[in-house]
Length: 78
Ligand SMILES: [Zn+2]
Ligand SMILES: [Zn+2]
Image (tube, rainbow, N blue to C red; front, side, top):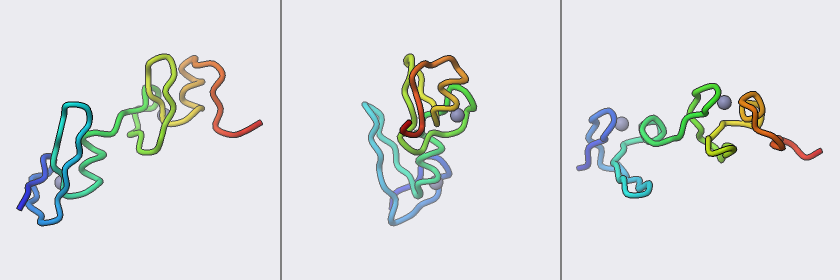
């Protein structure tokens, strides 16, 4: 059985996630998000969806990107 790298739980349905050169084992997506999801540069929440990349930083939404000074980003079509 594999062991989760975050909480230590041993689980027969654990899975591995590879991100660049880093590979980790998790028992749940909750743990995978905790360890691997990027953080919004404005509000610090975990970016679980696509998020927005602006000026080399990752934001959870256009609102946060704009609050941090990014130009020309929006959540919805005009
Ligand atoms: Zn876990
Ligand atoms: Zn945010």
